[in-house]
Length: 268
Image (tube, rainbow, N blue to C red; front, top):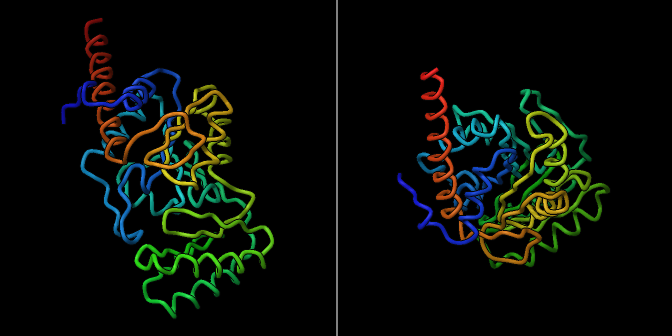
């Protein structure tokens, strides 16, 4: 797919420039950012060419590209296969660095929250409960009329469990460890090779990404909000499709740079 700078809106053009700038560390949310949201977590699809673009961009930046997601690391791996990237999963509870080592944060007991969410879902078939390492997500996208009830039940469940925080996402409520978030995950990556010493750029779409935006903005990096809504991010893209256009554009430039480097080597 050929992409020209004329096809990019103002913030997309700025982001494309950042992605092409040496010394950049790229962090990307997955759902609602790289892929369009779907009715259920299993329903999302990675569009053709995106994994290849991520691979090219990762090589362009010496491996300093990571996925920062609420999904478990194993799910991200399955979505991107055969590409394997550094990943923070479950909002930082799981984190695999560029060295391939998986680090697991300690987690409080979420069994009471899980039981309450499952009991509610048993009464309302439109609700979906997702169990993760140290976290429980209650999805109500298929039953939006139940939002108030879901908030009431999950709030009560979390209040009875010390060390648990309730995140309000897009048609989902997630009980997760209060001690971990996407900002902390990005901060940890930034202390390690190949991310250390680079300028962090983080793109995300939801309130669950705000901790990541706050960290990168406070440390001289750039947050990129995908979609509408108030945000600490200073750049804005209209949709996941807009981000994918930027990625493809950056991948074309990265491939061109790498090809030129090979040509230069061959001429020596």
